[in-house]
Amino acid sequence: MSSACPQASLASIDLDDLAGKQEKQHPPAIPRPRPCRSTREAIQFERANLAPDIMEFGERGVLNEDGIHVDMDRLKKGEVNLGTSIMAVTFKEGVILGADSRTTTGAYIANRVTDKLTRVHDTIWCCRSGSAADTQAVADIVQYQLGLFAMNSGKPPTTQTAASIFQEMCYANKDRLSAGLIIAGWDERFGGQVYSIPLGGSLHKQPYAIGGSGSTYIYGYCDAHWKEGMEEADAVSFVKGALREAIKWDGSSGGVIRMVVLTKKGADRHLYLPDTDYKQRHE
Image (cartoon, rainbow, N blue to C red):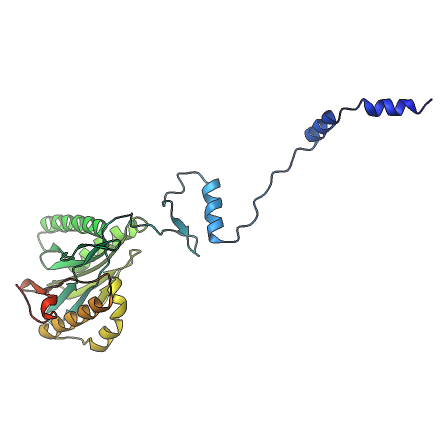
């Protein structure tokens, strides 16, 4: 007789109510994300959990091993790129800047005779590589700043001043610019000088500097043929020979060879065509 009561009490228990009471008493634990095993997983987790305004480096931004955001898609689709060979050298009386003339948009050659040597003051010029839009914008701003400096001070700026302005702009916008620059010039205080600013915005003073995609193939040539205090003719031959080798081996370099010789006399432009294997100067 007493066995019926336990059965009735068990039958009257609602399992859904029991489950609800247990959930109220013991809330479920918040699942913790498992440790990211790769850089790609770290990026996906960061995009999913951080505020959108933190991720300002584009859809293809990645974290390098130092945890610094680097935009791997700096050049937009179809953007004009100066995949190039540029260089500048000091010689006895001044400096010489040289560059090829090929501009590409992806695999398409957009311009065969681009002028990558840009004047920023009377005897201060720069060689541009990277994004054509970025380098042109930076060069225009520096040219304006140097003009203001010359008017306010009443004397021409030094090459060091120009290089410092370039470096400040490139470093402040290093995550947004694709610009590799070489600044060279002659001034009464320091004579001929060459400065290079690679991607990232660092500044390096050198007796000669090379840059662009074609520079990979001419490091050995430059080391073997470079001489301190060369005469102008020897320096022109050195620059022409290095750029000829870069054009020969680099698919992103080509066209004509342009040079500018900067001395106390001013700027003298040179042009060499591939029709004569860059041997004869054309006006």
